[in-house]
Length: 354
Image (cartoon, rainbow, N blue to C red; front, side, top):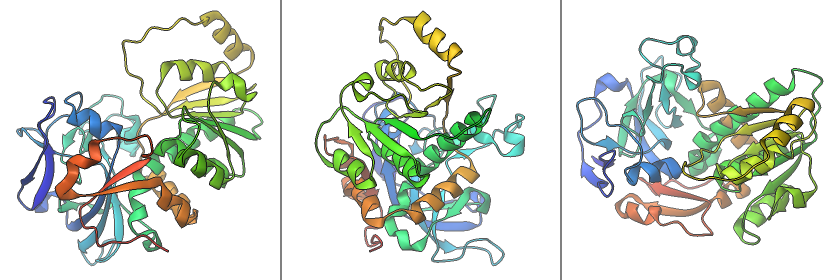
């Protein structure tokens, strides 16, 4: 079967190759891959900046944002042939650490977790894969290929859970949310904010185009420029850019008792001048909390699946701005200003819900 593979740490090593059928030892459930989303992590792996091969192997099968259809499953499995499913990315470490022992593997403490398509475990960008039921989540069949958005939605579902838990350290009645960044993560974070009945604002660098229209269609407010120009002191900030200057700007504008959740990863090597004392004073005197959030566990996937099932299908379909056939996978790596989410279709016959 065909699979998109790479040698981690070696730029330009990606290749579509023939690989063996998935081993039964991977799990009793056989899934055919329908589509896989492309994100910044995939681009870093393809550039040779990130990623680890499975033990004893040179090449890694890519793909962690998956959507598939069950082909085979045991009679007692919670899924059946024909079900649309998404594979969870992370697996607990073998020790296990205190968090992995209670299935909170997104909080792994020793770093020995594995991740499909990223770290020491083949991903989902092959025609078929096998898996166990505990790492498989059913998707509303009405979503069709839009189910490929579940993995990034799980990330923001976790972010919102963290915000809620920290906010409830005291009386918590948030009204205003600022999402920085209007990529897929930012737009999905905004969707979940709107579903919570909050006044959602999204800030990004572009001033026109599909992102502004997507925000407006949610009933949220779009901004470009600096956070100070918005006049906002939001109760919640979901930071989705990973840009250091944006992060620090946002930290300076969180409302009293507010919570800021960082979901974007910053690149190193950039130096900026800040007034550390002023930021510290504001955070301490106004009880501001800043938390980092990465990855997701099963309950976040399930929460994300519920959010997608409740979302407007037309709006979700507009998030997927380009679909590329597996044979033309390299076309998915060229980013344009109008791109939101690019998807590689392994079996393009699947259609979106009306």
